[in-house]
Length: 127
Image (tube, rainbow, N blue to C red; front, side):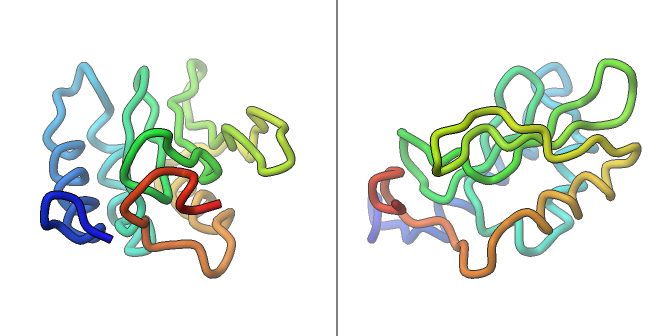
């Protein structure tokens, strides 16, 4: 599927470039770069909300939100939170870690085999 002549991998790459260029007021660049350093994560559509880094398996709203998101922790460190589960439960903490490298690895470890790359379309095209 394509949007404006772009295949989903191109749309995802463009969004990553955009997120990586955001101001420090919007997102901690170290968080973005730690996740971007994980090759598997580069295939998902990144989203930024209130200082958190979230991911979608599709390129258009409504997004999927079943990949754990990364939040800075007020007391230091980082929290990985699953925003939604297919069974309908919401906001489940996956773990708290001290470093961004641990956080990125934890997110990758929580993604089921066979997920990705992001598809062009909405969550309805994924589920």
